[in-house]
Amino acid sequence: MHTKKNYSLRQMMSWTRFETLLFLIIICAWVAAYYFLELSWLKIPWTPLALIGTAVAFVIGFQNNAAYGRIWEARKIWGGIVNTSRTFGMFVQDMVNNDHMKTPISEDEISKEIKTLTYRHIAWMTALRHAMRASKPWETVSKHRTNREWNIKPPELESTLDKDLEGYLTDKDVAYLATKNNKQTALLYLQSHHLRALKEKGLIWEFSFLELENVLEELFTLQGKSERIKNFPYPRQFATLNHFFMWTFVLLLPLALIPQFAEIGHSLKESFPVIGKYFVWFSIPFYIIVSWVFHTMERIGRTGENPFEGTANDVPISTIARGIEIDLRQNLGESDAQIPKQFSMKYDTQF
Image 1 (cartoon, one colour):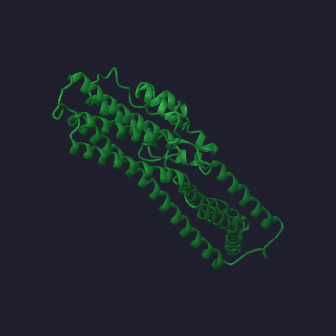
Image 2 (cartoon, one colour):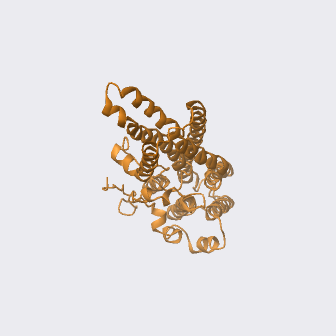
Image 3 (cartoon, one colour):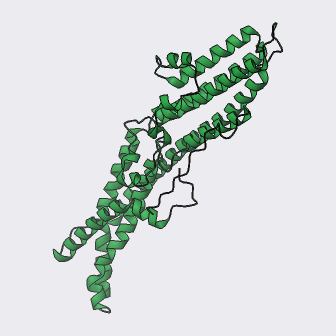
């Protein structure tokens, strides 16, 4: 996720340079045809174009609002995962004890049970973030050339789930997961089975067991919300209309803008003959500015549709999950040497 205060003008220009070049070609072709071929009859009034531009602005605004809503909801979901994970770690450490055991066990055995539950929770977060990074057919933002140039690759794409789960699960858990498609759901089932077994042994009081089950229920809820955003795209009919409406406006704009500048040029010919003769060419920068604004607004909306794709503007679920892991393992009493470091920030030196 991009963490600086703003994108620089140079970054924005580089990000949109191919579209800007296309706009330059379009307007230069139109102006040259209008100037050299004397196509003064080829024009449309501003009124219908203004109506189209207004409609495009509303549609793009709707898209951007919906895209921001998806990003913000995703961030709230993972914020909930942070809080619920900390609660789970605290409950496990305080609720797994000998208070209701007929035959108490050693503190080392209790610590082992606590560590198993905590590590399995870390494995659940790892499986969930890997599932959120899985590619979907509608996630194409990261494939755009100017997005690839940022050289942003989430940790999940540089490793495998099996590798990232090493050391967190028992061999029995690994064998159980191998037969399941939805790994994160399977891990929460294992947590529930483990908690029930501890309750039956007397290591967890019945009311404590119910509290822990409520925490697992909340984790299921947060997981389902996250999966809903991942597996249900921004409706394609809206995305398609946004794209076509924007390009309709951009392609029709020269037919109203060039004649307007030509008329201004004619009015200047008497006082400023040279400026008046070539004034129509001043429509080029204005066309590029207007087209760039509309296209960039539409493209920004598209970049925010899928908040787990792993681009510069997405929710940093990898960093969030690693931060939770560090908190949980520090509170288990592990040393810094035993705990993995936070994922490093990547600085793009290209810009």
